Length: 253
Length: 86
Image 1 (cartoon, each protein chain N blue to C red):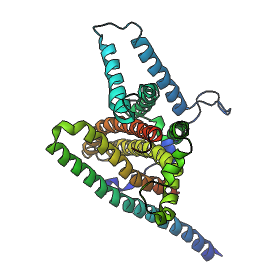
Image 2: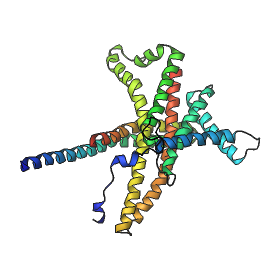
Image 3: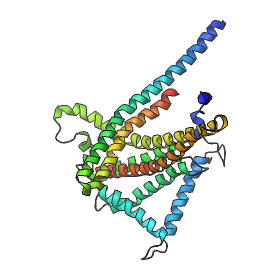
Image 4: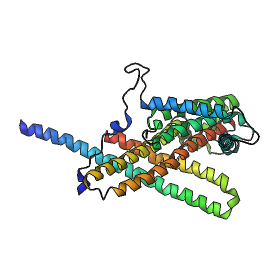
C-alpha cells in the first residue's frame, strides 16, 4: 500500500538524451554517440597498445588479448565458418568486441546506459552483416545462392508454393530484423529493469526505509545478471553472423 | 455540452486503458511459446551433455543458437508491447 503511489517515468526519459556538443546540427553528440566513440577509441588503444611489444612469455594484458583472440578465432570463426576461414576473424572479432564494450556500459557505475539500447546501433550492425552475407553468397555461388535457398532440394514440387515465400521472407526480412531486435530488446529490457529497481529503492528509502533492502539486493543481483546478458548477446550476435556467413559460403551444409 | 466533453475525455481514457491491457496481453501471450521452447532446447542440451560430456563444446554452441532463434519471438512481443502501448 505504501508503494502504491510510485509512478514510473515515461519510456522516453530513460532512452532520449539531450545533445552535449554541436547541438542542433547534424553532428550533434549526445550520451549515446559519445559512448560509442569512447568505446571505439578504448578498443583501439587496448588492442594496438597491447600488441606492440609481444613477448614469448606474455604479460598479463598480452595473455588476456591472446585469450580473446583464441576465443574468437577458434570458438567462433574456425568452429562455425570453417577451418580455412581465418580471414573472417578480424571482422567477427571487431564486431564482438564493439558490441561487448557497448553492452558493458550498462553496468558501469554513473554511466549506466547501454548504447545498444538505441535502435540505430543494432540496426546498423545487422545491416552490415546483411550486406556482407548477400555479397559473399553471390560471390561464392552466383545465382545458385538465391535459388538454393528459395527452392531447397528434396522438397516435393507442389510444396514450393508454400516454402518459397516463407524462405524469401526469412532471408530478406526476418534474418536482419531479428538480429537487430534481439540485441536491442535484451539491452533495453535490462536497462528498464535496472532503472525500475533503482527508482523503487530510492522511493522506498523516502517512505518506508525497511522495505528498501528488497529492491536494493535485487538490483545488485540483476546487475550481475546483466554482466552475463551483455556478454551472451555479443556472443550470440557474432555467432549468428558467423552462421550466416558460413551459410553463404557453403549453402548446402 | 459539459456532458459531451466528459464523455469524449472518458472515451480517450478508455482507449488508453484498453491499449495498455492489449499490450500487456500481447507480451504475455508472446512469452508463452518461447518459454516452453527454450525449456525444451536447454533440457535436451543438458541431457546430451550428460550423456556425452566430451561433446559439450559443440552442444553448447548449438544450444545458444537454438535459444537465440526461439527467443526472437518473445522479443518481437516485447517490442510490440511498446508499439501497442504507444
